[in-house]
Length: 312
Image (cartoon, rainbow, N blue to C red; front, top):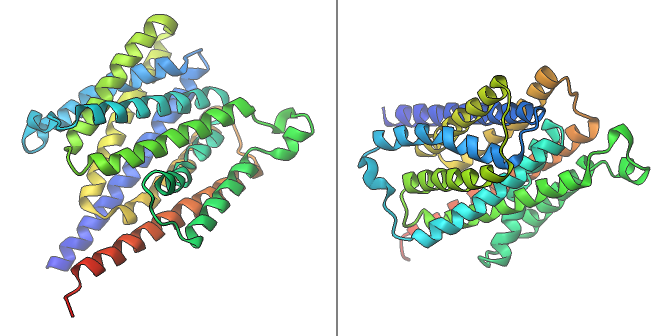
């Protein structure tokens, strides 16, 4: 009976992670559509956080302890995590306004590559030759997505803006920084506090920026922005719930369904067919990320076995 429950939990965790990938795909697709009406990154930040916040609050109230989970022992560490997260989201949303949906989503998945680099440089973690090889493969994927031949030949219809690529990689680097800080925060902070205060900080910063760059849009565009906030809030909750049901090594690979979602939504809603470069680069970046996640799982499993081994 115990094994059966475990299998059901893992299946439920995978289902939740797939739902999170779908919700994130809907969020990015609606924001991309909104960008066609002149919505800028700062506006996306505000509406995504403001309309996602009620979803997060409802979730917090349903958790054991309720609002007590919002207390924090390390407010400055949470502020730093929020600042990194806001900067990363602004970069990624700016990418959405400049690149095709599939390219923007694909490049955002370079964050595990940067996380490996940062864990080596900041946390002084040992990185073996196979993980370095995975990093190299991921960067080859980035180069392919950049379409170097089209850039050298003067661009044309096949090139994508270098500035957009820069924002995408900066956003991925900042997201990797968030990953590093979360490893430290989760030892002392409740997940409800991490999620809630990030959405709250994003709403405040977004509102301040809105005073400078916000403008009126059509009702349809405002509908897209509201939908993006709800989808973003649900995605965050689905992702968090998936980690309670199954190990991260099991559910994390399903995040790459977001690339599939971006390709489908881009083709369906925006009539944008991904290039061969995008598909090939996405395959290499996904392979790099999946292998890195697997090696991280193996490393932690080996460490656990060593710490729990009986003395001899």
